[in-house]
Image (tube, rainbow, N blue to C red):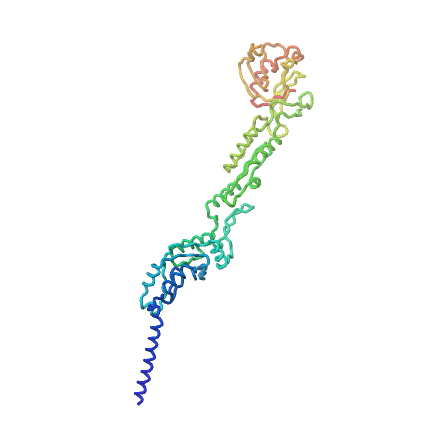
Length: 455
């Protein structure tokens, strides 16, 4: 009896199970027999589960439920972009997707994901941008380029998480045309710094700054020095963060050299000179004196700055003196007194030679030019003047020119007397006539560049 009851219960259970299996079969296969897609079916990012082919085509063309998958730091979110997309699909290709289902796939409700390329698609970029701006994770850090700050120190780049929407939108547009499943890793679309500390442009600028920091251009004016170093150079550096370039402005160079000329030029100035017999006298003019060639000095300095080259130098001079400082005559010089008709030669402050002389006749065309001059040449055995131009052609043994008027010191063997008042009526054409022996001794003592003071 018990056995019979157990058989009845087992039969009931088996029947119930069978009915359940039949129910599941009928429920899961109804799409198959009613020409519908199975559950969990997607075509080109659109859910077409349990739809007929015509229903699926309509939904796909309307882009209903068209979503794109985005991930950031492993967190995934689906964003519906259907409002910004219009597509057209071929019914034949959707039918082909339907025909690719097997009965088992219907029966067990397996997920199917088909990719069909649309025949045509339109993306409203503005709408898509709005959707992404509203739906994507918010930016927490913006990217920043490496750059050079106001103290000319390198500031490293910053890597942020701001999405380059322009690039992402273009990728989505291209992806829509493929009909493939769309998923994007946002890290791949972060806006990157244009310049990092390893960028060749930044590396080059840092090297340039280091070179400028190590530069020192020093102009020597005797004991005085004028220095161009980092402290001055950095005032004129200009960094362009957009191009990561460094430029040294040089419009200040002309002003700098002009100030040097104002400060150190002595050419043509009036000097106070302590004479041998007449105390301190003021002497104006002459060809001795420092005279900076501003144009060539500017050019030379600009080249040094361009090459970032250090150097200790003097300016380019158009004219020079014996020494730098307030007294540019020094203590080695020839002193000529027209009033006393006498010449003295001092070397290192000590009187070495002196003699009477004859200077130029006191007429406009023959008088000796006063001023602080300098010896610019020495020559033995030559003729002075021409009959056609000067009206004389005279041989001298020792010729020592000292100004731009063609005047100089020389022997005058045709004279038997020197000094006194001879120059007033029988003076030279401007030169300083000397006794033969004295002229020879003076010639041997003088060096080119020796100051010649005439007053």
